[in-house]
Image 1: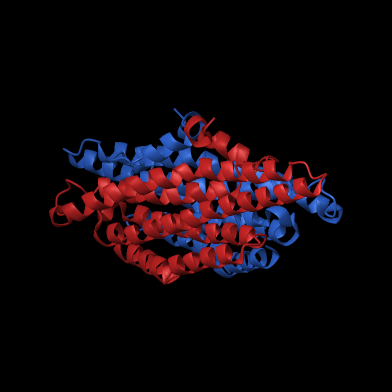
Image 2 (image 1 turned 90 degrees about the vertical axis):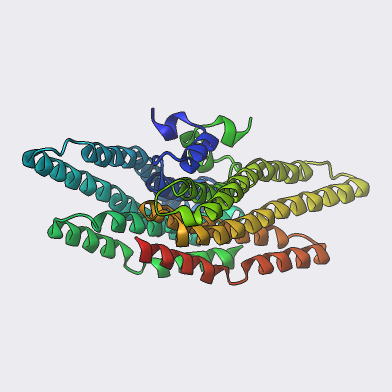
Length: 209
Length: 209
């Protein structure tokens, strides 16, 4: 079952709240990013073809296409996050009687943790793209729905900062120092000026309310 | 149809992204708050009954009960937000030929705008409660799922700041100055120290990763 495809919002939240470890924060992060992307699409959709917004039509069409693609991509990470968690859990469940078993179990755990790091890292990068894209609709989108551009940037920014936590959770237990350094370097690159960018976009929205 | 009860997460996001004005940012705000509450419940659920967490069991049971109620309450605001929007749109559609019609249409619009203000105001207050509650699970919850407490506070905080935008959108066009002043006073009270509280909780989570 694909939880975002087959379950209602209410059921998804019930599952999130439950004792079951998945869906967990990783899935919530993807929903935050996807919700941000969806709201960028909404503002673009409600700007395209509207009077007084002819001059920004081409830019809004580009934003719409980019946001639709981002949403699809980010939402696919819910399943990827659950799969990575299951991989880690399966590795922990491997036999550990002999030395050979211990070694192969430990390697499987490390592989799982790497997969579980790649997902929030990808999510963080995509959330950054949503934040960059929200600037365009915040500045030039239809003023009647401009608050939605603000919700978009806040949601994607919460997604980004949540993804950071989920990367750090995993990197703490990965022994491959090069992998960890590389992941943290990518995360830092994705963080560049992001808080400021998000706050500026929020301020732009407030000024256009 | 109740969109959060009957539609998948994916369909909800499709509807959010579409040209249709509902569901819009107001519904997204409620989902942000409800997702925060769900994650508080999750951390509490995965702390209750666990070894080394006996001392905080009672507090986690309280947090779980409060978070479950908050989630249900916040999620009910999705339907309330759509109903308020429809009320405003219906009012704009009233006849405006005679002076009497103009007056009664204008009054209906004002009533609709007040309803459309009450919903995000209620949502902001509930998101504040989720943020306060997330502190408890961030400080005392099971360290294995502590990142989820961080996602909880970020999601609820994004919900709060989004709700602020949605209140301001409506108060700008409400003529009843006393109603507006009262709404903004309530919003300011709900904002007290909230950014600091959210950042402190995020920092607590980071320190316990």
